[in-house]
View (tube, helix red, strand yellow):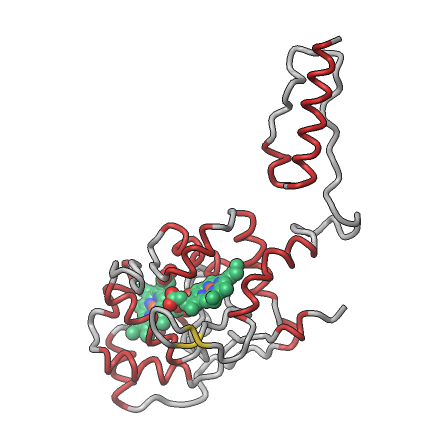
Length: 254
Ligand code: HEC
Ligand code: HEC
């Protein structure tokens, strides 16, 4: 009898835990039930919140909770980061999900040093990253026009030479918006000051607070002076692109 009481108590604790953190539920071992054949297994507890829209990978509510902290920076047009340097917070709506996930994982592991994004990414689980990345890839999709295959404006002859030297188009696409691999970014139309910052970050590699230790882009950006990187960033940022900043009011249609 005492044994059964302990078991029931353990089960109710497990249920409470499940209500508080749905993720923990899946990992909570069936505490107490082993060795007690008479005790039924923990029933699959329904998640918190209303039982609608279950078929999606994440319920709208939890996705909202996951993305809420991103909106204050990534969903305000022209919002500037002020630390460690001043430049605009990158546009991530319309960016490829695979690249978004790659970037978040790079902050999480420290391959990218930006302190704020590191601490944010560290708080995300693999599932959070998958859900958030899919959300931003699709954000604004129905209103977005695909960009033309060729850039709408020609670079200066100086910039044309620089782009050719490292063959940027061979990976980022002829219009810089069609990367050859989904884990590579769309860069056309991204904020120029952010592009410049990113290129300098690859160049400085593992330098604290600003570095990015990507092997491919590290080797490429080291071939250029900062003035050259800036000219490249200005041109690519001036092109039509698919990445954008979607202000928060447009997110809440309900
Ligand atoms: C305090 C402002 C702030 C918040 C909040 C924030 N970010 Fe960022 N994010 C930045 C800045 C600044 C950068 C550029 C960092 C760098 O230079 O590497 C960035 C970079 C990124 C990148 C890389 C973009 C690229 O083109 O490589 C992704 C992806 C990203 N953030 C996703 C998120 C997500 C998802 C959230 C919410 C979970 C979030 N961010 C919350 C400011 C913020
Ligand atoms: C061999 C393939 C390749 C070539 C060539 C290449 N890139 Fe990249 N680029 C990448 C990959 C892969 C990444 C993502 C790295 C990461 O995960 O941080 C990237 C990232 C970037 C970023 C960061 C974008 C962001 O949102 O943070 C910029 C800017 C960039 N590349 C510009 C260029 C420019 C300009 C050139 C030519 C001078 C170039 N790339 C040539 C593969 C390439």
